[in-house]
Amino acid sequence: MTVPAGGLAGSSSPLDSTEAARPANGTPVLEAAGLTVYHGQLRALDSISLRVYPGEVYAIIGANGAGKSTLLRTIAGLHHATTGSVLLEGADVTGLRPERRARLGIVMVPEGRRLFGSLSVEENLKVGATYARRGPWTIERVYETFEWMRDRRDQQTAQLSGGEQQTVAIGRALVANPRVLLLDELSLGLAPVVVQRIYAMLPHILETGLTVLLVEQDVSQALRVATHLQCLLEGRTTLEGRPDEVTADQVEAAYFGLAGTASIPREGSESS
Image (spheres, rainbow, N blue to C red):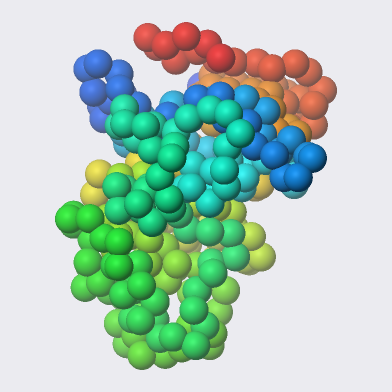
């Protein structure tokens, strides 16, 4: 794990529009409360809570097996929570199936892309449009944003590079016009230069009014783009706060379990 040298205090994310985007009543667009999830006898999540506000890039960090992907899949409805709830703009969606959550605006780009390799780029995008809400994102807008796709829209996605496949997976999610975009391990298996290009897309995506919940094992990358972060270790929260409120030592201790839970309270909210 690499954390920027010299600590994080005083730094700020170039995507940090959270305060301007947050409504006056402080209502989160997405909230998870006390989520506990088991994989057989293994407790994968232990009473995890979070609040994601409009315009945020909320990053979940942690080592392999920390529960990051389980948390995203539970919010998306792909895992069942033993206890706890998921709220979208204050409405309880805990009992809803994944496709219903997608229609309401919780859309995930899964780890490993999960594209239909035998289908073309455009056919994969059309799959994403199946559960589309009204909004600014269309297949045409995806082509305008990712210009290379238009000329290769009839190519099978199995023939694309890993970075190109990841971009198509993002485009497939965008055409559903999500309220909250769940991004699971965008950098997995990709060269650093490709990862940088993919993350460079985020500001443009956020301009359309999206909120992002991001799972990322690459801590340095997550800290560069996040407006808020939460570290998990063995299914528990060990650190929560804004990147400019925590130090590199705190992040390292939370990541490796060298200290107890440290929570940096938000303005107007209670600490975890």
